[in-house]
Amino acid sequence: MRNIVLVPAFALALTLALGAAASPTPTGPAPAGPALTSPPHPRIQALIAAMEKAANAHDTDAFLKPFLHDSSLVFVINGEVIHGWDALHAAQLKWWNNGKSDAVYTQIGETQFTDVAPDVVLTTQRIGSKRTGPDGKPATGQFAVTDVWRSGPDGWQIIYAHESWAR
Image 1: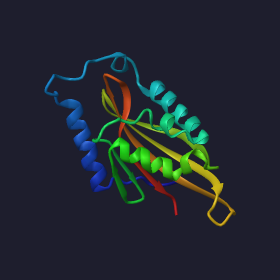
Image 2: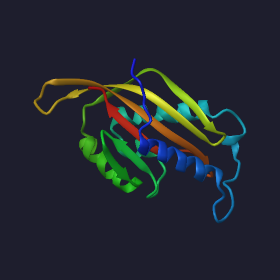
Image 3: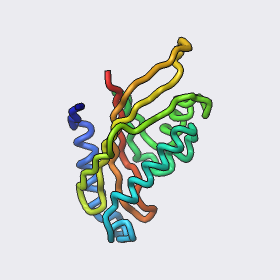
Image 4: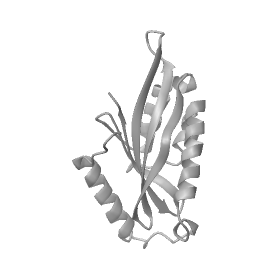
């Protein structure tokens, strides 16, 4: 069993996300659409399932569709901090060799949901990965993914994500 620890940067991002979710914007608070009127877990799980399908097809655009498409997106992976959707898109294309990767991803266990606020949900998953390594030999691994989802006018979107490989 893997222990998930909130590091200071993650805690700060979560605090900022909650503040942004609870604070009105210059044009007022985000409208309460369908995402706020019923439990969000099935909708978010459907987005996660679509992301897994896109990941296994190495379709960067489909995989990143649920991510917030602006410069305020934060993605942390193994100590590297990526700011903004454009930078994450470029990194994901590189990681998947422009769609030519042979990586296969499988979720291990169930997605864990933590309701932080009516319009903010935290998800945590464990993912297994199989691919051909740089040396041509099969490589396997596991990593943990934590996403902060926020509901807004465009539905549920990931505003902050953190991935770390198990050693």
